[in-house]
Image (tube, rainbow over all chains, first blue to last red):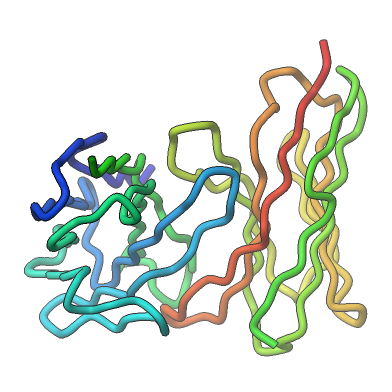
Length: 119
Length: 112
């Protein structure tokens, strides 16, 4: 099956620093990747849609200058949390759609998530 | 109109019993309805999905029932096992790479 990895799986940083999270599709190409944020015992909140070679589309209320997304290749998208603060502490999850199955299978494949703790 | 409403919020079932989780949607443009299972500290994993042209889909112990006219769909877990204890999310999306809308989630606990 299609595999999506995330790195790191957890990170602790000091307030004011920036943190980069990588999302990779390991065995398929993905023109579209999604970034979600999940608070404890809550649902997934879509932050942005990342399209290879173009600017990300952010959901309403998500600060694009704070959450920088880059989708430089068909297998890699990165989320950078800039000037992180304690309120940014959360579980960040990415997902990807298989380019080869677009229009045939709408399944999203999710990464294992990254736990960010900002002190 | 973009919401997917999920119930119950939590569910306790005896081992061997049937777990039932319900979802409802408003947007008739949705054409793909997946269910995801998530364990603590892990990303969601697709369990089973259905399109509105069928009323039921079964994969092993998991069955989706879909009622297009009522705009409702449900997940049935037969012979529930303690290992099924997790959070389950229903979702809905439109084809072509559109974003997926998730329900609020149901925390299932299966008692041994």
